[in-house]
Image (cartoon, rainbow over all chains, first blue to last red; front, side, top):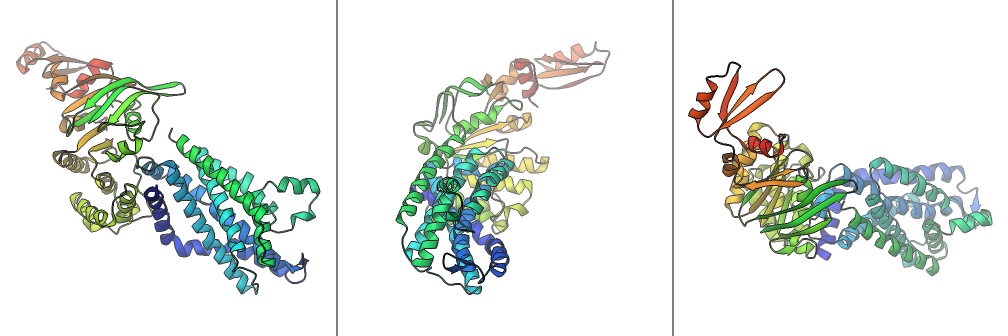
Length: 246
Length: 278
C-alpha cells in the first residue's frame, strides 16, 4: 500500500514542482484581496472578540484557504479522469483503492499547508503575528485539510463531468467558505443558524484555529469532530473510487 | 496465459459482452477484431481491472482477475486507445511514475526507462514534456510505459488508431519486436490489414459475441483464395473462388465492371456477420 500511495503522491509532487511559482502566486491572490478589502477597510478600527479585524480575519482565512486548497484536488482529479484519462493508469496499476485515496489526500494536505504558509506570510506583511508555533494551531489545519481532501476525492469520483464539479463547488464549498466562521463570529448569528452551522466542518476548523492563534489553547472537541468527519469522508472516498470502475 | 470463461458484461440496458470464452497462449499475438461498439474495449477494460465484470471468469497468467486482482494486474501492461500520458510531465517522469506504481526499485526503474526509450527510438526525448510530442511519439511512449514493469501480457487497444500509414508501420514493427521477445500480445483493432499483418490468431467479435476464432489463413480459406467484387448501381456483390483460374473463367461472362483480388479478413468477417469491420 505504501508503494501505491507513494507513487500517487510522487506524481502530484512532480506536478506541484512544475507549477510551483504559478501556484504560489494564485494561492496568494484571494487572501491578499480579502486582507486588502477587509483589513484596510475595517483593520484596526473594528474590534472583534477583543482583537482587530485583521487579526480576527487571518485565522479565518487560514481555515478557509486550507479548505479550498485541499478541496482543489477534486478539480485536478476530475481533469485527469475526464480529459487526460490518467486515472485509468492508476486503475490499471496494482495498487488498492486505499493507497490511491491516501496518495491524493496527502497531495491535498500538502497544497493546503503551502497555502497556509502563504497566508501567514501575508499576515506578517500586514503586521499580524499570532500563535502559529503551537501544535494546536497546526493540528486543526491538518484535520481540516484531511476532511476536505477526502471529500474532494469522493466528490471527484461521483461527478460525471467537469461542470458537475463546478456545481458542487458552488453549492457546498462557496457557502461554507462564507458561513463557516471565516469572516465573522458565528455566535452573532440567530440561534437557529448557529445550530445549522455547527454541522459544517469549517466552523470547527475556524474555531479551533482561531482559539489556538489567539489564546494558544487546544480545542479538542472541534479537533475530534474534524477527525471523525475526515475518517468518514475518507472511507466514503475509498468506496467511491471502487465504484468509479464502471 | 489469458483464459476467459463465459465472460459477460451488462451496462444497464446494454449487453456489451455475451458469455464469451477464449484462450490466448503464452507468447502469442492475438487480434480481437470487430466493428466499433462490438465489445473489444470492454473486454480489455475488464481484463486490466478498469471495469468490473458482470459474470464469468478471467485469468491472467493463472491469476483470477476478481479474486487476485493485484497479482493479475502485475502480469499485464496496457496501452489504451486514448492517449493518457500526463501532459504536464516529461517523458521520463511519466515512465517514472508508472515504475513507482508497479513498485520498481529506483535503480532498476532508471535503467529500464533509458533502455525502453532507446527501444522505442525516443531516447533523445526523455526530458520533453509529453504535450510537445507528436501522436506517433506519444503512442510509442505509451508502449514503452506499458512495457516498463516487464509484463508477460501486453494489451494494445487500437494502438494505431488515428495515425498515418508510415507511423502505423513503425508501430507494427515495434509490436512484432515485442512479441519476438516472448510477450503475449492481445491486440484489438478494426484495421483488417493490421490484424492480418500482426496476428497469429484472430477472434471476430460482433455485438458482444465471439463469432469465430482461428488463424487469419484458416478464416480466409473458409471462403476461398480469390474474390471478385462486382459493383452494380445500388449494391456491391462479392463472389469467392478457390483458384484464380476459376475466378477468371467466370469473370469472362461479366458485362459490368469488376475487381479481382485476394480474399481478406474483412470478407471472412462479412460472411460470418453480414457486416463490415469498419
